[in-house]
Image (cartoon, rainbow, N blue to C red; front, side, top):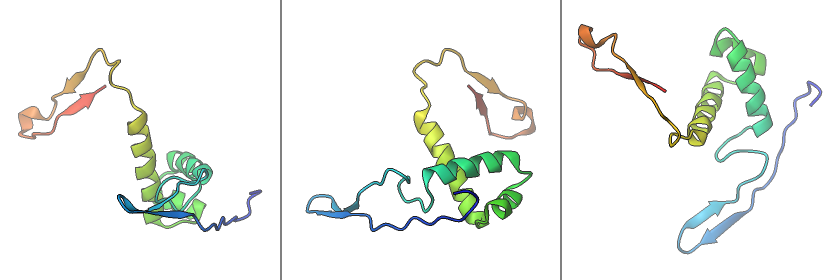
Length: 109
């Protein structure tokens, strides 16, 4: 906040269900298994998009390279979860590498 490091420490309630085991309740300011708030992750994604590399972004954000990579992975997972393919009308296939013996096909949506 106001360019000062802010740490949120909270004991998150846990439940012990006989059927599902021990579960941690979800808090409104952070995603599951995340060590950062959703607001910080949003800022981090903007910095990652603007920076020349993950290394430069992690230096600016003062986080480790692994933390920056994890934030990216979580953002991609959230984006894919929101994606709706039921309205998809057309799909294209890029076969540029087919003749060179590569078996990778890229789906353009």
